[in-house]
Image (cartoon, rainbow, N blue to C red; front, side, top):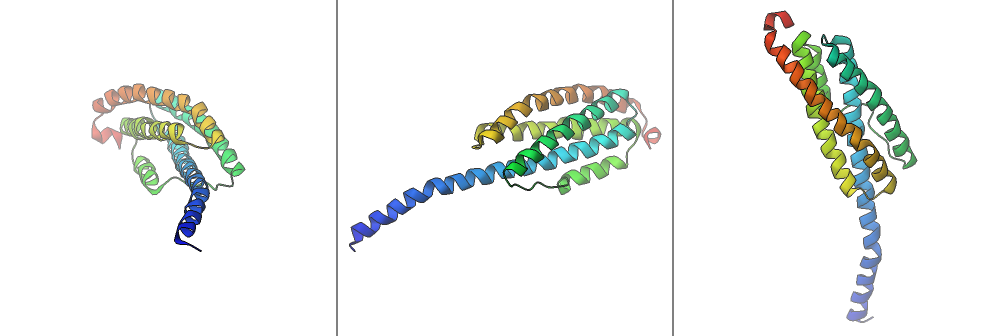
Length: 182
């Protein structure tokens, strides 16, 4: 076999395998997105359940209950989508998220409310909206992209609600003396 023929066959083999490699990378990227989204959703539900129990501010309690309801529904949808693609999702939040939840457990009163609003209202939703916007642009799986695009507006709404909540809780947290919040 001539060198030119061998090179030609090698090039043809690479061209044939390139779409499969690209497809595998796209599947991996979509799976990585789903796993990160699942961990974030689980963290949101856990922190929000804690807020439903511990918050003193009725606005915080209401927001937290809505987050439990909305994110539980979204998590269930994501589980079904992942199962249809044979992707196993995490069953608990990431360690960093778990540490933030644990940090909330030691707080009470207005300090709890303000920290929950900041970390699991604003910060978590900023991160999640960013994650979903990237997935909307980069997802190669039509079903994943459709789910992302359907879910993103609610997450953006949650972020706006959280920003409003943060303003309300910051004002009350600064009025509460540290000794009273223990």
